[in-house]
Length: 167
Image (cartoon, rainbow, N blue to C red):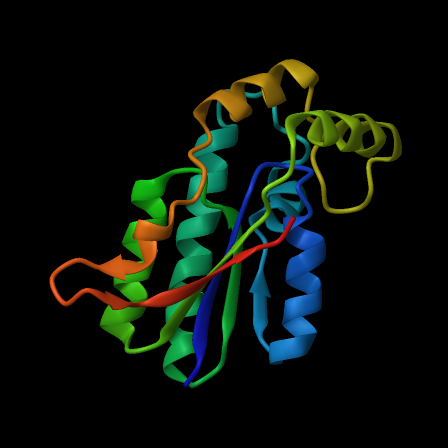
């Protein structure tokens, strides 16, 4: 059975790098909003429209993902999924679609994230935004780490997916 894969973690945690590996391993469709946003809107990280632009791209990518999943192909969503409610929402959507569900959680210490952020901003590889350290500080405060109970269906006490801690 095909699977909906969620890449969970903060910027610079290695989500996209891991997602590219999984893309080949599972012969899956990888959807990364940052690449689309950069192409459509440029490096708008500090602009007030950034979050709305990103949200719109994610909505379009989810529509594509649903169709691809219905065709029996794995999909990897490289959205970050910072909030528990968002992850539960997609777990439930996977259940509705009748597909497997897996979280790939990139749990990286804060000090390492800052080190990677500094390197990333210096090099600015293709397909990534510049992120000021002050923004990363905000992101770290709002990020909700993955909890195992996010994968359990309470009513039937059965596991709905897998959790891979990719540290």
